[in-house]
Structures are given as structure tokens and as C-alpha cells.
Length: 379
Length: 198
Image 1: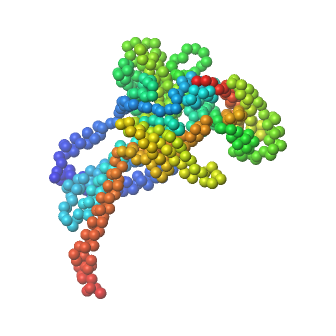
Image 2: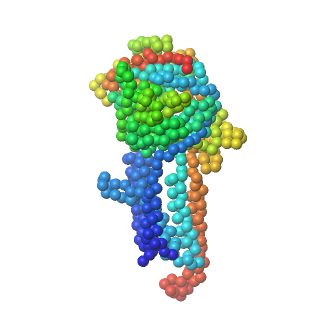
Image 3: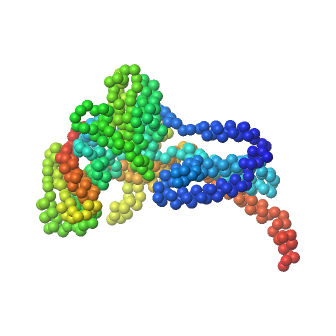
């Protein structure tokens, strides 16, 4: 029996569907206790997870891959290509497209936010929960940033910043940490622009956006003997400004930034309240978009009218007022390279179902026969 | 159509071999502001990017400063006293008035609101100080209104600076014993308050 025949087994399809039912049910229950993010990571984004700490159980990603392979093999190895089964064939294509959209969504979607005060603008959005180590040379109005995602940082890892003429050694990195000021006297063992001298690791929070990382980084270059290890903490307001050779570099452990295909400047934020209350009835932001070609246009983003540009969607998410009474607007930014795929998959699945039922309905002889007898004979 | 077992195994190995690594990224960041932000000095936080005097303070020993969010200019925590939460908030004008704010805090602590006479008597018992920046600060102590028998009772100590154009609140909430332990630190934070030029 060929491998395709084995992989296209209906038993595998059934097993996968049962496992998906269990995972969906289990994940839904689990998120109440452990939060949405952890439930997603454990049950749906994983290939497997351990039950009671030792018993492996397949995660939704593994199950969906098996189902995908199973369906593809069924299409090549088991499926009978007859005109009467056209609807079923289209349905299979629809389900395969659902798997493809799940893959693209899992790996291709970036969720971030853009927070601007009135008159401020930016061309990068910021992650809710991911962090990066960024280094740049200060230049007026713009900066070319070189950054590494902090998620996989491990002690002893060397990061290549050869364009600046040095490397950075990750001496210690904690995904969640508390920072402590050092003793008032004595020379500091590490350099930190806010006076932090020690980090204490914490257990990662169930809500990852509450994690604040910290780490100690060592500059490695031929003449870096005088530069002490650098302590960077995610909650700091200050950049560490370090002169290396003839240049001055800014170091920061900060939320990961995502470049946008355009610059967004908040011109005005408008909040309308229900009469005689401070409860918002609607709020909208008037923004100026500056494209890479230098063109500029005004756009309004409101609660039910997001801005769509290429693969990006900007949603009006929240607002605030700072100490000087200036209004601050926050946009949720979603980049989805395959945002049309779920619509396409749904459309193909619908077309398959319609084709199948219409063909069933008009199949010659079927409506009038029950158990081989003519319907009129029974009457 | 058949697929050989070797080809299938090869595809599985290639798929499993795909591991995400920390990727280096280079991007251009442009920040458009009304004016360039002022440089920020260690232990002092500036929140005004306009070159005008901005509120500054010193972090008391043993506390850690967290970045401001929403209405908060800054937040502080004491790693040794987990229930302690300290915030600095500045609101324009009188922010509804001192009595309205004190009564709102009373209700948050489970107490009942003051009447005018009772409020004036309560105010007279509160300590006032002048900060490093010559700002008048009134310390509102709610612990005196609470029984010391319940160590888990939520309590509050607040510093209020009333200025002609704005009111600054330095608010510390937490369990009653921990509020008492951090009383001097909050007073030190109030003392350090000043407006400084960037």
C-alpha cells in the first residue's frame, strides 16, 4: 500500500476531527483559568503539550497539519474524479484553503498599536508583548535602528552589530524582572541611565503584556575595555547613551517596533459624549497620511470606520488625556498578508455545498425512489 | 499518484528543521513631534516635550519607578510590599475640588462621605509641607480613620498639590500595615516634587 493511501485514510480524518473537538472544548475551558494568550499558545499554536507534566497530547497545529496532509493525499489518492462528485471536490478544496488561511494568519499576522498625541506622528507601530534590543545613532528627525527580537535571548548569545563596529554579548536576560536601585555608595558594577543596579527574575505573567524584561549586555570590541556592562530594563524612560569611538549610540530594551508603509500624524482627536454625561458616544481621529513618495492626504479613523492601506488596518482603539490636557489617540494596527484568504475559503466552501446539494436535488431518479421502489407505488 | 517514503521523510525533516531565530532587523524610525523632546536625566522624569518647566521628582529609596500610562505621569512600587501602588496624576484646574476627591477616595475605601463641617475638621488634622520646588503639598492620611485590627484593610495616603492651573495628586494605596511602612517614602516623594527646566 502506498504512503499516499495510508495518509489519505478516512480514520485519520475522523481522528483529527475528534481531536480538534477536544482541543477546542479544552482550550475554551482553560482560557477562563489561565488567560486567552496561554490557552492559545498551549492548545492551538503548539505541536504538542504535556498533560500532568509528562503525558504528551497533540496540539491543534499538529492536528491541522495532519488533516491538511490527509486531505491533500485524499485528493490525489482516494478521490474519484466524477462529475457527480464535483460539489464534494470543491468542498475539499475549500477545507484545504481554510488550513492555508490558518497557516498564513498564524505566521503572517502582526498585531501592534500606534499611540500618538495631537500633532505627533510616527512611521512605526509598537508590539503589545514582544520586545527588542535596539541600537541607533541619534540623528535629527529620523534614526536608522538596528534591532534584535528579545524573545529568544539566552545568556552567552552574541549579537552581531558589525555595522557599528562592535558585537553585544547577552550576559543575562530575564523575560520578566523587577529592577532595584543600587547601594548609595561604592562604584556601580553596571551602567544604567536610571540608576538601576540589579535585576530580580520574576515568573512570567499569565498576561504577557504585563511582563517587563531586563538584561545585562556587554559591548565587545577591540577597544571597549572602559565600557562597563550595560543594564537595560524594559520599563525605563531613558536611553543608555554610550560613546563608542567617535560615535554616540543609543541603547534601549523596548517594545518591538513594526515599520509601517506610511507615516501617520494625528491632526485632531474628537470625542463626543452622550448629553449631560462624560460617557463617550463616539470618538474619531483626523490623521494625515504621508506615503513613501511624499504624498500627503487627510483621513478620518473612527470606531466603526478603520483605515485600510495595503495589508494594514488601523482601528480606533482608545484615547487618553495627558497632564497638559492634550488628547492622545491609540490605534490598533493589524497587518495581515492573507486577509482575503478566509473570505475565499468561505466562498469556495459555500460554492461546494451549493453545487453538491443542487446536483443531489436534480440527480435523475433519486427524488422519486425509496428503497428501490417508486414513490407513486407506495402511495 | 504515489509519493516515495524517502521523499516524504525528507519533507518531514525539512519541515521540522524550520526553527525561528532571533532575526536582525534594520528599519528607519521617524518621530514627528511639535518640538524635540528634552533630554531626561537619571532619577528625574520629564513628561513635557515642549521645553517648558515640567514636573520632576526623585524616586524614594527602595521603590522602583514604572512608566506612566493613561492619566498617570508615573507609577511606583515597592518590591518588598507587594500591595503598595503609588501614582502621580496631574489634572487641569481644581479637578473637581478637594472635598469631592477626598469623598470619592473615602467611598473607594468603604467609608462614607464627609459633610462640609466634618471635612473641614478632618483637613485641619492633616499635615502640610513645602516641596523642594516650593510647592504647597497637603498630605491626606486615611489611616487615622481606620481600625488597626484588620491588617488586610485597604488604605490610602495621598499628597495633593493645588496650583492655580492644575492639581497634582500623589496617591499611595495598599494594605494598612504596608501603607504605614511606606509613609516616609511617600513624604519623601512629595518633598522632592519640583518643576524643572529640561
